[in-house]
Image 1 (cartoon, one colour):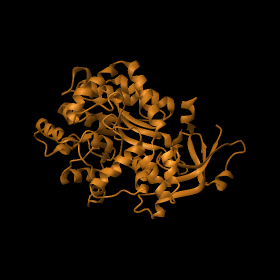
Image 2 (cartoon, rainbow, N blue to C red):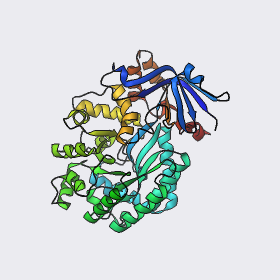
Image 3 (cartoon, one colour):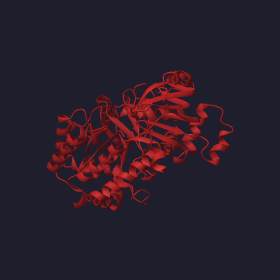
Image 4 (cartoon, rainbow, N blue to C red):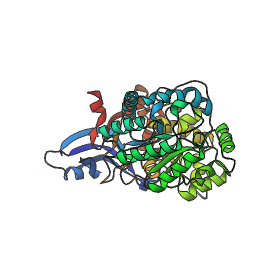
Length: 437
């Protein structure tokens, strides 16, 4: 396979950056090179050094003066909700019943699922996202559609058929047994096929009976290397209803604890209103709290206390996500812009290096896949985003007075969107160029 040599300003993180002056937390090359071969990064350093390692017939692509970073990672999104994004006026439970569940009934139709999966993954790539942890609908066909489209693109994605057997319309219900059987079939068919990862996906405690959560726990025990994803403590009415349905539970988190659903590959969307006991339980098990700022603001759910969760004696592992379609934008740049504001409302600040760490290595660490993606390290999969901080007239004007890399990153986060994404490489293949042809 022909090698590709990319040139540009390269930025990749080694650890959490404590401050904007914590230079040892990242690796930056003002004239950097990335040598790609067979879908991986085989060399990353100053361009002059990497060029010496390239084959004679290497394909050279010069992205200067743009920034090259690891592809963005979205830790929580609902691909069947593309056509309910920007639906007016409801809080979580009403929003689900009024908009989401009726929309998801359409995914009984395999052709509809394939069309939306294709458009969803196109949108992800268009915005610089190369990996997403996605909820499908309750229908086995929707997961098959998602994985087929993901596999065609050679993307590393995490997804699962939603499990839900109560408190929803008939068209989006399964049973405890059928959810187990369908999930098992999908795991055997798709997990580990190419770059595909399966996630056991009970939607949340309200729509799963005790019997179904028992089945979800059984799947977690049978397939301990799989992810598990669900929702937790997003909304006060949701919490109250959950505790009515599970009166024996100490709190919402305890519902999932009882069925063995906590662990290092367990992803809990939202986690806004956790008690200290619940936060301790998540921390003790290494479970991941997924911060979805645009969704939390849009639905009026509350403010995720990012910095406190990081700093507490038992810190939480945190990922960030769009949560389409409760979330209002496919862009992880826009997501972190809103995240910055949520954190500011809690009296804290998130510096731009921390934001871009979170979008890349931070989310890869939270999803337990940092050995594959999230960095520009040698041996990493070649998922790369190329960012242009002068993509719009307003950005160009602001860049006239931006003197540091930190200022440039903060400008990208605050004013950037899909227009700032010049190119996206998935396993070494230029995707935005291909989409435009």
